[in-house]
Structure formats: structure tokens, C-alpha cells
Amino acid sequence: MQNTKAYSAASSTSPLAPTVISRRDVTQHDVQIEILFCGICHSDLHMARNEWSSVMQTVYPCVPGHEIVGRVVKVGSAVSKFKAGDLAAVGCLVDSDRSCPSCQAGLEQFCPSQVWTYGGVDKHLGGVTHGGYSESIVVDEHFVLHVPTHLDLAATAPLLCAGITTYSPLRHWGVGAGKKVGIVGIGGLGHMGVKFAHAMGAHTVVFTTSPGKAEDAKRLGADEVVISRDANSMQKHASSFDFILDTVSAEHDINAYIHLLARDGNMTLVGAPEKPLPLSSFALLMGRRSVSGSPIGGIAETQEMLDFCGQNNITSDVEVIAIQQVNEAYDRLLKQDVKYRFSIDMASLKSE
Ligand code: NAP
Ligand code: ZN
Image (cartoon, rainbow, N blue to C red; front, side):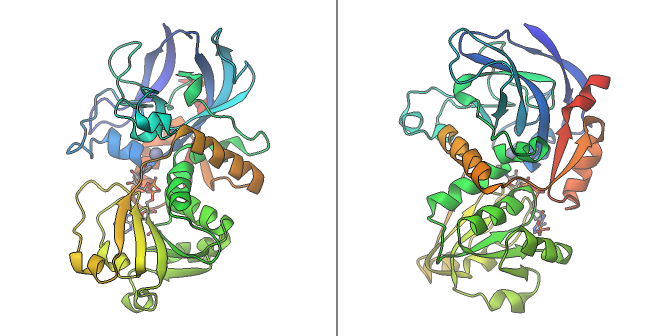
């Protein structure tokens, strides 16, 4: 066992603060990574504040962080994919049973025994797993990804959650040329959704509550921008979308978007607001429309997404911060004051 510096929340109401946590020693199939950057996902905030308590209780202390990039410092004797010195990345999953039908299909995100990067059951040390707001992490190589070497590392970290969570449903629902696609909410996930939908060749429409993001949305790849609080602008798009991806983190009216779907159109929710969202059956049945959800993505698809980003020079738009600014960053996230993802420079943790 080894100690590593980290930032953790001690309770749902405490700010994150410096701490020391344990990491297991590297076993046969493990890779130890010195963490260079870790993105701040809105899920980190939901978890640190126990906002998903109706579905899962946060166990404290909680060390968030599942958008991890870094450098390999040590590998186990049976590791074949990585060597010391390589760049490496870890997303939301660090283990699964590897044998269930979902794992066999490369869809580890649906494994009943999946282990989340933080807040999961730690089979090695007991207690719960701890995430990327830390100096280093030890992960089985199956769950470690290769990073395209020419991409900016701070801007690559958010791909590990915001990237795969938007890439996966866009692929699943066949987004591409000739399709009209809506992206709702331009935060960490949404801005990646816009970049991917555009790169996949779709006619991409952004829905935002923030008029100040309209110009950026076009730069990110949107063909059209709709200020969603304006009912007239919304109405102009009635019954016209093949697919809508909803990334909103808070309560909002999803029926207003379902009405914008064409016949047989689908809206996929990736945002995970604290409370259930009311659903109008009329909005659905009038166009045989459907609503579904999607969690992150499997390991093979996460690598596919990283390779796609490498080929198309896609990264996240980031504001790089020191770990000491993490509580301020959480407050700003709630005010929609980030363009478009905070990425923590983990070198800042060394001074703690
Ligand atoms: P974020 O950066 O805070 O972005 C959320 C965006 O939602 C905001 O930028 C804002 O966009 C919009 N929004 C916020 N409050 C709103 C409100 N009251 N009404 C309407 N729109 C509002 O968050 P994120 O990191 O992208 O995460 C988004 C959600 O996805 C979170 O709930 C997170 O937990 C969840 N998530 C799910 C998965 C998954 O696997 N499914 C993975 C990661 C995250 P505008 O300013 O453009 O309106
Ligand atoms: Zn996330």
C-alpha cells in the first residue's frame, strides 16, 4: 500500500479539502499513473454533495474525479498494453466482472458488477474507490486508455467522461450526414456533443438558456442556435429533429424538446438532474417518438472516441485551474460560468 495526496469531501456540506489516501501496490495486471490533469464533471459535484441519494448514497470521504490523464510510472509483470513513460487515461470505470453478457459485448458500463472510479467498491483495499483529484492512481490495464500524443493534455482529460458520454449515444442513434440533431445545454458534455455531431456530419442545432454562449456555439460547430427560453424560436423547429441529446444537469421541461422530434425521432437523456422529470405521454405518442438514456460508454468505444479525437483534432475547451480553486470552480459550475470544462493541473497538489 502507498499513500498519495488528494482532495476529498468529508460530508455533503463540506468543501473539498486536502487529504492523504491509500493506493494499492501494483499487481500483475495493474498500471500506476501519475495524474497530470483531471477534468471537473458536474457528476463530481452531484456526488460530493450527495445529490443522487435517492439512487445511491455517497460514501465519505469522497475523492471525486473521473476524467484522468497522466503518465505511466510503473506496470505489473503481465501488463502488455503500457510501459513506464507512456501517456495514459482513465474514465469512469476501473473494473467489471469481464464475463457477463454486457462485458462480453464490450459494454462494461452495463455490467452489474461495474466498479466506478470513485465511490465504487474497492475489492483490493476495502471501502470505496477514490478518484482523480489525487496524485496517482493504480488501475487494471483493461480499463486504461491510450491517449493520442499530439493532443493538449489538459484539454484531453474531459474526453474521458464528457467526451465518451456524448460520443456513445450519437453513434448508437446513427448520427451523421443528412440527420438533424439537437444538443441541449452547452456545458462540459454539451459542448463536446456539438463538436462530435458536427464532425459526424449532422446538421447540428444548439439549445441553450445562455444567450452569451450563442456565438461560441457556432464556433464549436453548430449550424443553428436556439435560445430555449424563447417559445417562438422553439416552435419553428417543431417535429423536425431525428435526434436530440439532452445534457442538462438541472430540472427543466423535457416535453418542450420531445415536441421538436420528427416521427420516430429519439431524445436521449445523458444529464442526470437530482429530481425525476415529468414526461407527457401525448408528446411521445403523437409522433411515435421515444426517450431513452445513456451512461458513459464501454472501454473499446472510449478508445475509439479518443482515436476519433486524435484523427479530427478534437479536444475540450478548458479553463485550467489549480486544485486549490476546486470549491470556487464548483460554485461557478452551478452558475453556468465555465467555458466549457474545468481541468485541474495536478502539479498544484504537490504544494499541499
Ligand atoms: P455542466 O457543465 O454544468 O453543463 C450543464 C448545462 O446544462 C449548463 O451549461 C446549461 O447549459 C444547462 N443548464 C444548467 N442548469 C439549467 C437549468 N436550470 N435549466 C436549463 N438548462 C440548464 O454539466 P456537465 O458536466 O456537462 O454534466 C451535465 C449533466 O450530465 C450532469 O447532470 C451530469 O451529472 C450528467 N452526466 C451524465 C453522464 C452519463 O453517463 N449519462 C456522464 C457525465 C455527466 P446552457 O447554459 O447552454 O443552457
Ligand atoms: Zn463525468
